[in-house]
Length: 49
Image 1 (tube, rainbow, N blue to C red):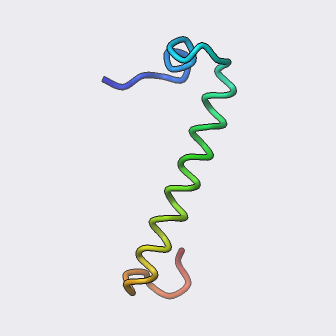
Image 2 (cartoon, one colour):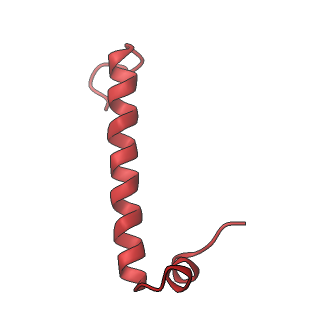
């Protein structure tokens, strides 16, 4: 299974807000990396990141 934000925070010993912000930052970084990869290989339609 999957863990929710509260469970992750408990395991890491940090506030739930910290988990949420780190997850959002990680999703953004992954999105940017995947977009760059796709763009470099011509896999994106024009006008769509």
